[in-house]
Structure formats: structure tokens, C-alpha cells
Image 1 (spheres, one colour):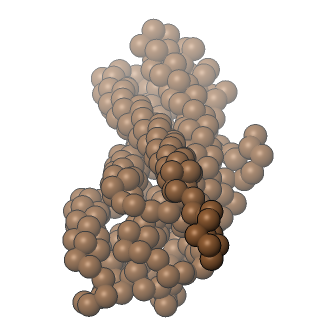
Image 2 (cartoon, rainbow, N blue to C red):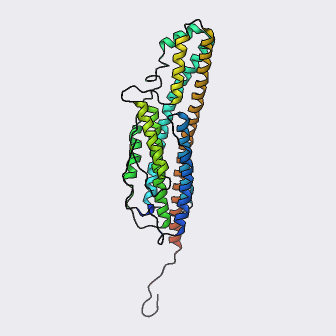
Length: 346
């Protein structure tokens, strides 16, 4: 995830301020949309490589799409608007990304079950707990919590890259209405946020340092500075966790805590200090509970994102169908005229 100074749509008029040729409607609606995003972006700072923060980022993305959906639904746009068509196509990619992330979350949930099983053994049979620890890779971050991307027709990395490429190659600009410009601008904004959150999710789940090159948000967006700072900080944190070698410290802070406590349990389980062992087990229960809670929070957020995107896509499709039906109905009701000859006869 790298920030560059590449300009987005350098000649795209919707991102420029117009004082004369654009009605006040453009400024009012775009300003309201931008301010709602800015408040949410500021709430995400400072970021951290944790499940808790990532769940908040997904909720922000869901909010952004809901705001965009509400704005687009209030506008009168041609059923054949190319930016809408591009958005509908990208929605399918986002749905696939959500499914990929959910599948990887399920693998983390399987690891969580192993931690819970260890806690049960520690409470009932220390001998079996020792045996489980000696045979299990439960505390090894590079294997226990590793999320492998497999079983999908298209690699999730490719899906995220495709979303980023679509931002580089928008539909050709045509003369359009104020509503059309607002749609174009709004779709581009949520596209930028979608790529960022999708990239961050996959990067944190897989331990990579970023899949795509994240461009700096155009200055025409009032939330550009805050968003660019956020993306830069996340990118730096991912690089720091990856380090210079192949060993990954851990993909989330919550996982680091669980693994550290499991190692502590293994270190004291053979000692005669039962009080120390009891305290260490309690600490493991605490951090395992936090991990479980935040994992569910993240999972629920991605499920909510899936439903939000599906609802938005279906709503736009319904609106396009109604618009086409209206056009056909109006065409049928237009009275036909017939040429009149010189003698006045039909």
C-alpha cells in the first residue's frame, strides 16, 4: 500500500469547483457527502493493525456506500450512465472480496476453537494440556494463524487490483447533467475508500505489506488530507510488522496477545508454581475472549458490508429498470403526426 502523487482524472470537471456553470445543487450535495465522510475518517485515526480497528474500517466503508446509495437514489440519472454500469460491475468484485475475507475469517475461527479447547484442558487435565501443546502449532504465528488463499476461482489479490485499475480507467467523460456529475464524483469517492479498506483487510489477514498502489486522494475532496494520512500510516505499520525478513510478527494485535500468553503457559506448566500458572491461564482467557469478541465484530462487519453492497446494487438496477420502462411508456403516449397534402386531405 503506497501513496503516490498521481492525479486522478486530471481533466475531470466534477472534481473541480464551478462558480457559474454548475448549479448550487452540486455544491450542496457534494459538500454534505464529503462532510459525512470526513467525520468518519477522523474517527479512524490513529489506526492500528488490530481486528478492532479493521472492524471499524469496514463499518466506515459500509457507511460510505450507504451514503452514496442515498445520494444516487435521490438523483435523476440516465439508465445508460456509464459510471453506473462501472459501479455495478465493481459491486460484483466487492461481493467476491467479501466472500474471500469471510472464508479467511472462518479459518481464524477454527484456530480460536483450538485455543478454547486448550483452555478447557488447562482447567480439567494438565497432562492432556501439556500433550496438546507439545503436538500442536497453536502458538506458532507463522503457521497457526496463517491464512492461505485457496479455493477461489479468482485470487482475491486480483480482485482488489481490478478495483484499483477501474479507478485509473474511468468511463470516458461526456457532456452530462449536474446529477450525472454528482454520480460520477460519488462513485469515484467510494471506489477509493473501497480499495483502501479491501487492501488493508487482505494485507492484515495474509501478512502482506499491501497489494495495490494507493494513490493520493485528489485535493478537490475535503477529506483528502485526512484519508491520505490514514492510508500512509496503515502502510507504514504493515511494513513494520512484516520487517525486513520473512518472519511475520503476527497479523493482528489481538493474535499477538493470544500467542504470547500461550507461550507463557507452556513455559510455566511444568513448574511447581501453581499460583503463577493460574494467573497465566487467567490472562490467556482474557486475551482469548478479546480476540474472539473482535473477530466476531469484524466478521459481522464484513457480512454487513456484503448485504449493503448487494442492496445498493439491486436498488440501482431496480431504478434503471423503472427508468427504462418510463421511457418506453412515454414513447408510446406521444401522439403520432401525419403529413398533410396540399389539398388538406390526410
